[in-house]
Length: 349
Image 1 (tube, rainbow, N blue to C red):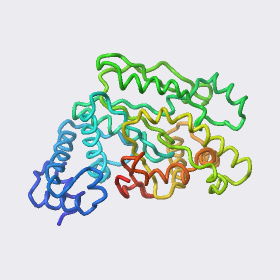
Image 2 (cartoon, rainbow, N blue to C red):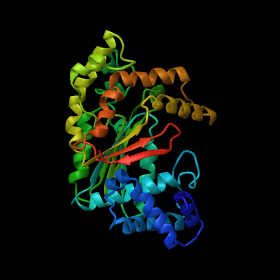
Image 3 (tube, one colour):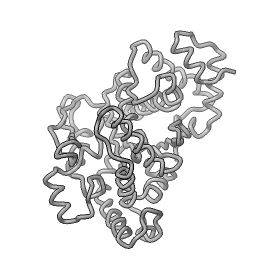
């Protein structure tokens, strides 16, 4: 029996699906019960679900759309395309159809987990099914440069933007509420942030005006994360080691409460989670090295390590993200990623 990748490669090359192809793909789909459950696939619906997926793949090929990924060919990425990106697109469309307004989809993932790539791919695929997707990052909600300078004077521990307290929560609430409630033809300003301004300190820039929005992809490294029992901070993992580290973590945990009204605007939340959270550091190093190889400015490895560890001291993944992967009341979909960036698992908690 052919493997899914070989079947899909032949299909993309112009081969027509055979009954043997369908049987092989249906067997593969149903063999992973957790993933099938996440997409709502059962024995009696698997054929129709895969045909919808195939039609979207065919449309992608016919229109010669380029999948906006930083590396790899479409053939290399077929497992991601077939088992995540295509069904996720259809899943989002179905969720949108159940509402009488735009869908607000939260995407939580640590550094290097692929949030930016995912949102770019989804925007491309959503256009193929006639849906207008817009991306909003938690980074777009940073306070202005001037406000962050004042904030740093008040709390010198906030040496980098990013932790709770460095965002304009009211701006985020106003934006998501407008997207939820505005008439379809109303123009809505989406905040945007230029990280290169002020020598890398970053600052807010003119908003992007959008209308006719169907799906909002709201992504960020702690989007949807919730405060934990303060007692957990006392036994937090490395790099929370000193009393000062624990106090910083406790303060960030408290500030996270201010973000809960923002998370209440989410209709759904998905989590991108590496099989080992420490991979984020390795992946961020690789990204910076690739930037330098392209002639762009990038951080040295030791700076990357300090940068990532700073975020772990603020909201440690083992305390704030990993537990969410098992909380059905807050998370709708979990995507686990292996060290080699292949897809490990897709499931609903």
